[in-house]
Length: 154
Image (tube, rainbow, N blue to C red; front, side, top):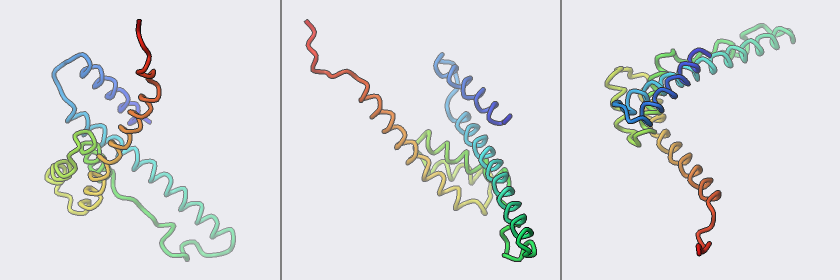
């Protein structure tokens, strides 16, 4: 919850600064937004996965099956928070600037984390697609609200 409050405050501050014409840009804020969203996603996914593991373990014990006998389901884990932050930063950076290869190479060069190369490339490749889809939907909704151009002014 604190991360999302920090994200909202940074979003408002960045919007104010860009709208007021202050010196700055969108590069560092996009990295920050992506990293915070990645951390929030990791926290939510970890909480959901632990709830799922607890539910499976309690079901196994309620029907008389030894816990863990169904394989690895109760021991499921997710990646560490820095991995999710890096992937989120790459996805957001590639979505903002529509440059997926640049974003993925930049963040790979910063971290040298070989184990997250494929998720990093997938997220950086998907980011611009999602941004373009959202942009088209917003433009279509704006066109539906515009009055027709065939009205004659006298």
